[in-house]
Length: 199
Image (cartoon, rainbow, N blue to C red; front, side, top):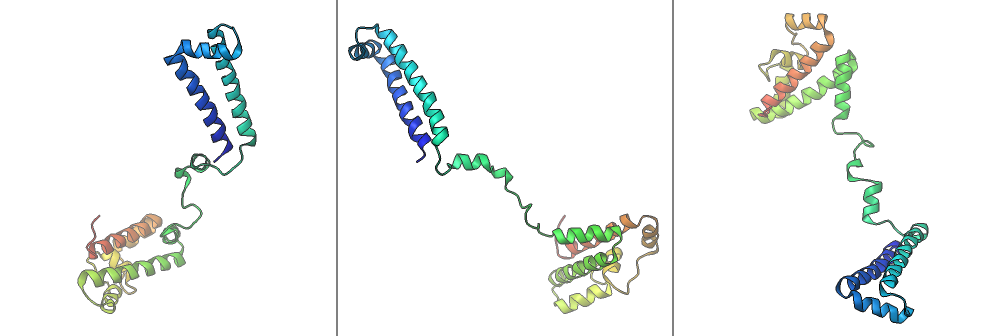
């Protein structure tokens, strides 16, 4: 138990006792104090007692803060490190690597695009195997042949020998970043549809 808790608890208990005596039996409390302190006026004695308790409380607070030491309470810990400050910033977020690869691929990094298409091909193989109820080997062949989906853009992105449409190639020439992002997005959507997922 921390010293601060003990000191404030004791001072609070004394202050409560005085307050209760003043409320419920002011005459008796004043006369009791007069017996202890002499023939002074009871009201004056009560006011002086309240002032002394206030000064003691202020001193106790200063003393407890100066020498309070001890282990922090749960409240102190919550103030120093609030729950909303707990984040995952010190560790890599799930799928952060693929997000970075997609950004690089969209920007024109061929190696990053290879990484993205490999990951998407693996996901498409799994989704098609589950959705169509076929083996992974048969699903892999369907992905490589471009027959796993009816979306020509997605099929061509993952099929080595399947060319993109003339319109898609024109888009790639006019606005390469937007077209690369569109192809990736279409492939992700096709994978979700094949797996039975809903957007």
